[in-house]
Length: 209
Image (cartoon, rainbow, N blue to C red):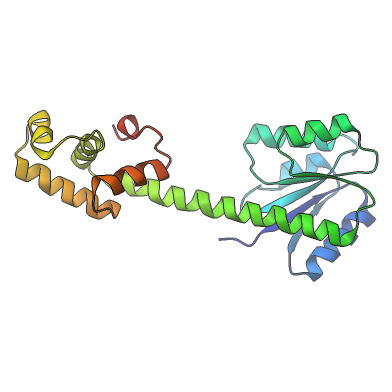
C-alpha cells in the first residue's frame, strides 16, 4: 500500500508551509496547493491520506472543491479550516462528508491529532476496500460452469438437483464444486455465502450469473 499523503489546499502560503513543515517533521508525506482548481487538476486522489481544505479561497471555494470531490467519488477525509466560518458552512461541510471543521488559528497539536485520526480512518478504509477487491477477484477466476454450480450452491441446492438443472452427472457437479471451492478458498456453503457477501455481492444469486 502507498504511504498516506496529506494534501493541504490553502491560499495562504505561510500557513500552508507551516502546516506542511509541522507534518513533515512528524514523518508524514505532504502535498501543498494554493488554490482549489490547481488541486483538482493535479492531484490523483489515489491512495490513503486526507485533505486539509481552506473554506475561503479565490476562485473555487473549499465547499466548491468538496462538491467536486463528492461528484468524483473521492473517499479521502476532509478537514476544513476557516478564519470566518459560519454555522451554515460547517453544517454543509459536515453534511457532505467532512470529518471536521476547524477555526483558525488552529492549535498545532489539535491539528496533528485531527489529521492523524483522519489518516488512520482513510488507511482502514483503503485496506478494507483492497481486501474486498481481492475477495471479489476470486470469483473472476471461476469458469462459466463453475459459476453456474456456485450460483446454485448459494441458492441452497443439493448436488443432485444442480446436476438435473444443468444436465450434468452428479460426479461432474461435484468436480466443478470442488474446483470452485478450492479457487475461492472456502470449504462449505456457509463459508461460500460469507465470502460472497464480504466480497460486495449483496445479491450473490444475480451477481454471479
